[in-house]
Length: 222
Image (tube, rainbow, N blue to C red; front, side):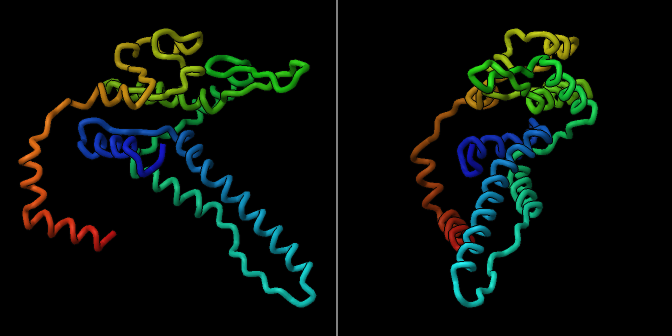
């Protein structure tokens, strides 16, 4: 979802309230940053090629004006934006090694997918496994907490009703406090309490001088 969306506002509200923490595995954080960084790098490469082509086509000297590619700075910028919504949950070396092992041996949530008409297959899912194992590891390291694992990727993670081996064994002993939700809608149902607003009271508050002054100050700052 977008950073400026109802979904991100929901997670920020839950986190700010302090009743529950909102976390994202390191693997997911890097994946989110990569969704921004890869197009950025590709556009910089395209701009570099275009500038070089333009330079060669010009009979006089052309000064390069394209700024350097600052990929690490760019990635860090987007990491920081997402960390305003959720804290990072480290993905341990143990989880990464097990994820690589599962991908190599096609163990869930990893799988093999066909890549051509001949039926040749490619093993995939190492990052999914690392995400899953990070959540499981966190749950085991925090026995006093209930962990809500939220993912709409039911194709690889399932819907929380049953799990294939070895995912079922991952949850042995923590099934009662590892809750699998498949949408943010489920999060709303779990943590939000329906309420009704008094429209007249709202109008009264919005029309109050202190409210008008606050809105004006925020508008100037924006």
